[in-house]
Length: 546
Image (cartoon, rainbow, N blue to C red; front, side, top):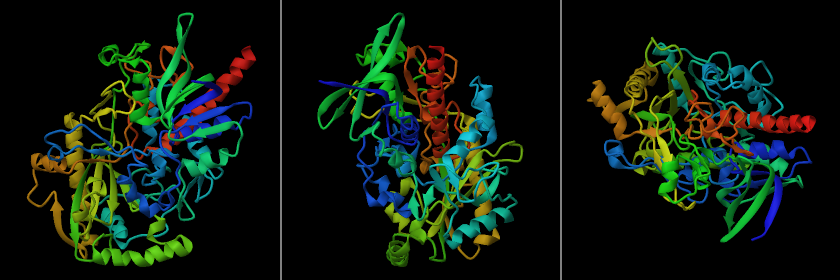
């Protein structure tokens, strides 16, 4: 087994890994290897914003993890946990919503001891990463690799949602990433000229012209390699399989894990970093006893209100709905416009579950279709109606990611432990009441036929909670399993270096200590931008001292 050496080895070509590959390889003195377990992002469907539903079913481009089943959630049916498995990672298969979260999210990170991670510290990296269609401003950039655009086409039902929110007494906002976070409005998206603009298009493809960046796809990392230098364990490379062959590569400077909230803790544990008793159970040699690896799992738990419609102007896969899609298909083929050039989740907002809440604690996603179970309920999708999904923005419940075996091909166990905290239960139920209030407004009178879920018979908190559990979902925002901090359960420090070993970092959503108030793709990109500066500046400082 031959060994090739690089300065940096990046494991995972997702929203963080692709950013790092671009920024680190910009210096021609750095040689960079980017390893991706999935295939090249060659499917034309990746480019089409309106085709995102396909990826819920694709085993080629989606890891299609399943959480551990819970008897009283979805009647014991395991929750699907989609994760992108291709260049660009989940930015290649997600809903493309561009949200940063609330200022307090990042200020809370810093207040917990993570110096340099406040909102004011992060804002320059958000601006650096984006070219916003609205132009440069105090809150937005216009020279970044990631194109961020407005909604240019809309189903009439989306306007009903915005009008209904106002009629129900909630505010409106025209920029969730600006000074007014609270309220209803249209989302912005990582879409450019009618095509998805994820990190593969924005960051990775321009960088692949560089001779000092090598990208290897369908390369599944088995473990990080360590050597002993004095009293320290030092990462010096990785082993991975590709086309049935075991490969070994070494890193002169650093190994950087960017596999995401499920895969990064898996690689750490397979490499001997994690809770000692768990590693020993699977016959894995302990390199560093770090009990926090795989703990602190957080996700935006989601529940919905489903209403059938008198009109047929939303989205449906029934005969009439498919016929209505034909003009849009032709329009997209001609000039990349129409509904296929946009995400289906165009409208939504951030609301307070009750007036005593200081910062909005629920997020709404409105969709002009009957949507449940990641869009896999074809019977529901065949009808005409609309859905309003409410999620708990800052959950208190914590779950775990753990190994099934010492085999890297075996998926991890995912236990979200949803709604184990009573405050999460209350926030979710109150969120459904807010959704019902909006959908009961005059704006929907011409459309409203029947609430089929939770259903008019569900009125008490207990009944609503069980109805929420019956169709419980998630918003595909898992974080936290390699959390940043200095407490005993922290996995990385504020420079994202793994505690107790050298030359190993984790840079992805797993380092987020507490879940941000909104979609996570934009924050993960900004985290990677900040990490790139940390890594490059550390090398400069080291050279100057030397």
